[in-house]
Length: 454
Image 1 (cartoon, rainbow, N blue to C red):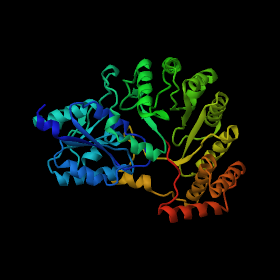
Image 2: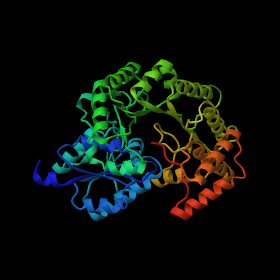
Image 3: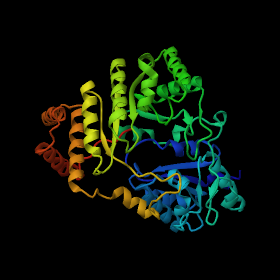
Image 4: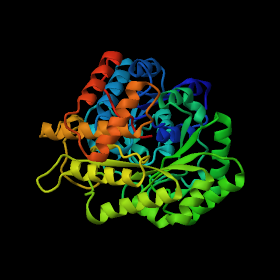
């Protein structure tokens, strides 16, 4: 590589969005480019991300943007256009869920040169080689370009070829500050076990490597917790057991958290959960499929999972996604009922309610025809404003009942009243909510918001 190339920044951009999870996808791409000068800009944390990208774009080798379906598309497009305005010859490459499932919509904007379909670690390196040789992105496997939008999705690289994540590329102090603690995101697997663009190659790092990396990261950064961010952590029960026993044998208490489906918790069982707690697992985030009916067998599985976690003394966070009520199904009432039943099992369980996000269709299905349509669909209010108010009330009182009460008398009073309301299921005449929300606006200039899930 010439000195000129080594000085050119490869700019990776995480668009504005809710939440503060570390951008592990971009970090994996950056870590796969050890010979490049990679600059990772996170629009959720940077005070002026567009200006920062524009500044870097003047001499950048390329701009790579990861795009989730929904509101982040607006920021991704705005930043891409600004970067292209600053440097008209700058190659702009998009990846992530929307670029994988609907590359044609991204390319139709005229501001995107190529979309990585599937995993991006190897694709970005190949894109850089093609850009520098002048051969064009159309020759790169797994990259859709205008006129060639149907390409085969790239699978993640083999596990033995994956480099450790270079966390030095992130401003960890800023993430810790926003999160209110030294909590680090980590992934020990790639791909998916089910259907989808990455199905067919699901792999995991060996348990001994995971134990060594987690322990080293915990020591180096004085971590309070390591958060395993992956969909199928519990898919291989023997690996989970080996990882937990490895952490126990390591002899130092590394606190960690992980996501699981209700079925995973039930399959792990009481003994398995006790082993996880002994290894340092302090909390399990139970993932409920967005839009699933929280009735009948689905509800029973959730409550059984809650009882197992309670018996094993493992904290639980149950994120209940809610759709707009329909004539045949009131999602707000179902989620509220499940939340109250879970907190009856253990008052310390967290049961936040969230509006369902939009997801791109993996098969041919009806959906907005362009990026703006997806943005508007996620932002669109429910047809019934009364239902939105019902959700807002429940979200407020569940949040205040389940968060630490704090030391101030006012916060402790709100906490006590919120717990009483949740227990009784009484959410109307919510004067204290109006007082808190008004006070928040006066103090910060922003509306009250429930904390996002890690």
